[in-house]
Length: 453
Ligand SMILES: Cc1ncc(COP(=O)(O)O)c(C=O)c1O
Image 1: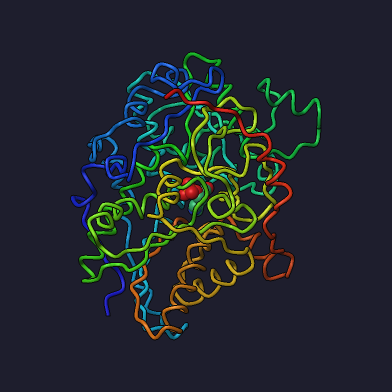
Image 2 (image 1 turned 45 degrees about the vertical axis):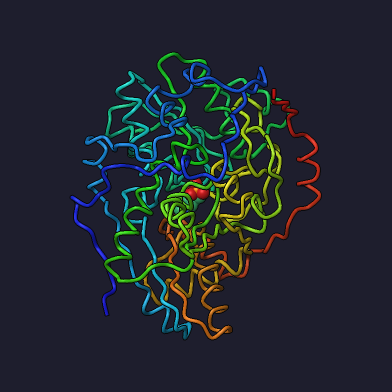
């Protein structure tokens, strides 16, 4: 009974996989928030270095990974693929459950897979400082780590409620040399305006993105970095699925269903996109994105043009959205509280290539506890959404008398989220149902985009 399927350092992928050539139709343009016209690479230069802009619009199926990036990937890649024998036994399934584990990175999640190349392309472009946002702190700590490795300064706007509730993620960012500000802050016009109106505002991801974008746009030596959603972020995360494909071959299996939790879409894209080409070539594989019922972007949002941030400074993209000023309830999976979604994931959901499922917070913690008590690893609250859906798939196969091969991405560990587990065991967590009224209100404020032709 083999438990771990491992690759050698030489088997770290040499190229990232870009799903754009395998999309069922053309990708909608990204729109400038001011002019409401399609953005050009020049429009993006105040925010991103040219190397990343080129990747954002690349139509190449495979993009070479720079050796400098592969060298740093060696610290934790290739990440292990596990067969969940103990979990299978505990739930009494004949299905075979595998998981790819991204919690082995120094920051404890999949986020460094893109933070490292983003820091690299900024370094060779001449950027001195990165401004970015973070919700619960996973992305901020990954970017702080990557900046440290390439000698860049790093300013992180951290959503205020998490800044106070998650002091250890803040400590990790500071240890790796970043400056961490509670957002809304008095550092930006956006932050000052919000604080003037509402001094006790606890912040949101949309507000923190606005602050980081303003910081980058108003400082010549500074660029912005985003930890999810964008095409180049999904590109970088493809190392997860490319490795998993090789590891599934070692296991002598091919997945019937692949599952990833979904916030902005990057870890899901990472595990699922390398299998999209197989699916278009006729392979029967289901790709399922797992999201919270409290922020049900893919299952209850609309597929339309919307701003990426609250203050309407970030580009407008065609995506599933709950409205750019939708404020999700305060669930513990902070990394899944985003109003929008990757345009690539969105297009594939709209085309029926990808499915989405929404799961409640309590059922996710229940799945996480079962997983930790059998497999040993304590999952991040975000990752527990993928576990919940994997367990539901196994249960369904059992009911139907079938034997399925289930693969999910365990995007991170929960060592810095133990307060959430304490709250769960103390019975202090709630399930938030679909906040229909709040979504309806937010959707009334979508931008009007008219495309020529
Ligand atoms: C552990 C973990 N998993 C998943 C996510 C969701 O992000 P994405 O959808 O970009 O993978 C986050 C975001 O912070 C995270 O920290």
